[in-house]
Amino acid sequence: MTNRSGAPVVVGVDGSPSALDAVRVAAREAAARHRPLRVVHAFVWPLYGVPLGPVPAAPLDGGLRQEAEKLVAEAVDEARKVSAELQVTGEVVEGAATPVLLRESRDAALLALGHRGLGGFAELLVGSTAVQLSARADCPVLVVRGEPRADGPVVVGVDGSPLSTEAIGFAFAEAAQRGTSLVAVHAWLYPTPVGPGDIVPLVYDPEAFAAEEGRVLAESLAGWSERYPQVPVRQRLVAAAPARALVEESTDAQLTVVGAHGRGAFLGLLLGSVSHAVLHHARSPLAIVRHHPGGDPA
Image 1 (tube, rainbow, N blue to C red):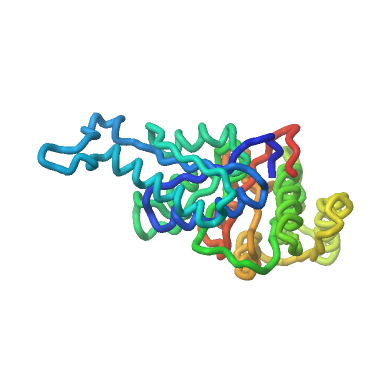
Image 2: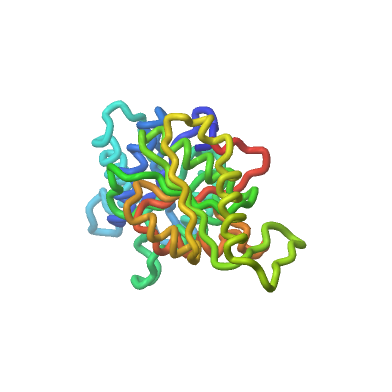
């Protein structure tokens, strides 16, 4: 996790059951890190000039503003059920959800949200706000699906690129904090360029290539076990599509961790194709960690 001294865990709420799941998970995350929890509701209606107070002949405690305040108060109460010692604050912030939560992420240690909100199309697996925040937030984003497992390992996707360093460090820190093991997954189907200008061979020896991919995984993890000696590590080399391999590993995981942008994505994309696919299909809470030059991932 990022080391922003005193920074809170922030959770976005919109009144949906998914958001309340996220509140409970965020409260546990904040309590475990001895950080405060900040509950935020993005209040979009002022942007449209909609009357915010009670309508004539309606109860005095009615109106959109009052309903938003109630929503936040209920979420704060739910968080306090998790830990009586947890410092919890809540605020209604005017603006659309994505810009509001992006601003919150600048000063947050972790941003948590449910995978589906009240808006959008029911058939979508993940809401548009979760997708946008995963790609652009200035802190790790935790996307919550229901109540997470209390057991199981932390799973992290490793692709050998410099951009995955933060994800690996975040995953080790999470495993250490949870007192569990780490499963590092490196999957491939064919050679993939690591950086601009790399030439991918048209013909290659599969066995030699598999051995090279094993070296990539081992080198990516080098040094982390010394830093976190209490974390048992299992290396998983898989000849499969990376997204499919990570989704399958997520079934038994407490948490799955991926970088926002790996070596196989186009440089102009903020969220890589693998992380985008895992975001939509992971079977455990998913942390997406962006690369910040010079940052300490743990």
